[in-house]
Image 1 (cartoon, one colour):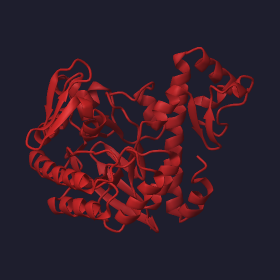
Image 2: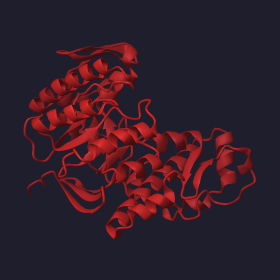
Image 3: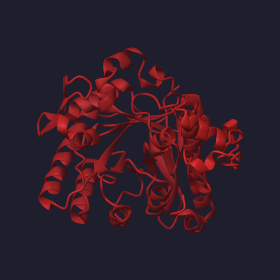
Image 4: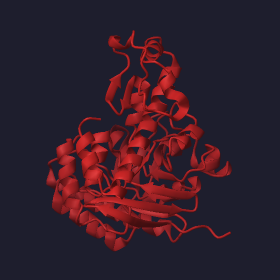
Length: 370
């Protein structure tokens, strides 16, 4: 049987909010979509089967971290990342560009060689060039591959951001050449430019000239405010290609997602639901719950009575409070699953409301309240 080609279609719009579908040979992805983050070939604290039951249709893993441990050759010998982690879903792999920023004390940038890392584990030297980045993602057998870029921290230094855009464009060209042609996989470019509209447009125009299967907006949620992020998206929404998926990297809160969907974004990822779950913060339709607060000690009501999956509502806030205050890992597992499930319920309702033409009513009801 021939493999299904990667494709994307916009099915309906509610002003700028878009209902769409990404088709891959591993299954379809309804958009707007949220990708749970499985940085190191696992979504922390959960079983992959439960991730699928939440309605998740794609997950994200990370090239840098899998390069360090266990190494791409070991994963390739296991049959690729999907078999290695027992995941049937499509997988997008980030390129490591974010780690160039977040681990800046452990790497240096060379225009030709790429990012030269000293491992955060044992100090071993790794060179992540655009070509090596693509080579690693091919060994992982990723379904959506990201180009290597430089993701700078928030800065008002125009020259610094301009040089970063030029470097990312140069690396994007090399990434595209290394990727070659594979109609069953996708390669996404990453739009950089900080808070400068002209640099964002230059980056986007250069990337569209190269030609990619999708376009990510990078370099946001790195110190900028939500207002600043939305200003960038307000500018880009009229310039991003209409017929390609739009991915806002590393974002974010439910309010961030609602605001970004309003501005035409199709794909999201963030560690927030899993990290928050591990530290005692739950997302619910009535708002956020800090389960370790003492007010929950005698509260025998469920975390979110509306949840029907996994019987999560059979665990009281009192019990969850007890689990966290005694450092029992079950507490983190339950809140992580709750949060991923909530995010997928949110995405389902966003899609449903775009379909019905009522997205803006839904947005006004929940933006800033979740």
